[in-house]
Image 1 (cartoon, rainbow, N blue to C red):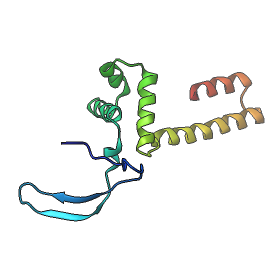
Image 2: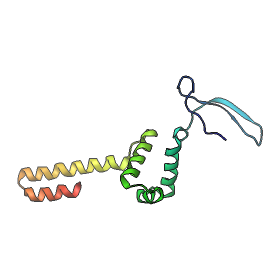
Image 3: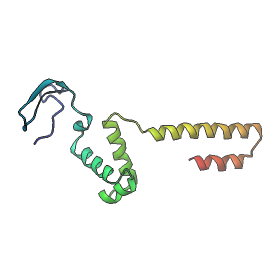
Image 4: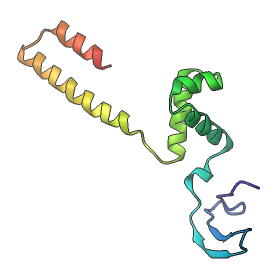
Length: 127
């Protein structure tokens, strides 16, 4: 079988699925069905997703399996997330938490509750 095309080869516009058929029963269902977003990934993105899932989401496993560096694996994951129109949840949460912690540390420094060296040390842990 062929992959589902998701762009009109003439205009470049979006396509939709209009018919589903069962070989077993011969039943046909017609309508306008959305193409799943995962079907819109290119071959390289699908291959990466498969390896990522087989490695249970562990980028160090993806590194070993594909023979690539961690930054390359991370970049490919970011590209995949972008293609799926997704944003990482934990990064956003961690950034928010770290921003709050940084603010508190700087407030402590400003009030003289901690020294500059202590603030530097605490801020270094958050990086």
